[in-house]
Length: 69
Image (cartoon, rainbow, N blue to C red):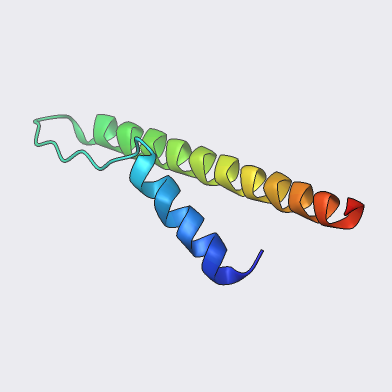
């Protein structure tokens, strides 16, 4: 897959994905703020890992199909 096609598919995925940024103001103890930030960072990393696994599997699928043709 060439870079242009990949970037086009990635932009389409980002438009359809339900990831978003939520900005909230609240009075929380600093320790709770750290817990929330840590949890959101773990969620972000898990999402990135999932996207990379999907990308890897998709690329492998395309290579296999190309080879079989």
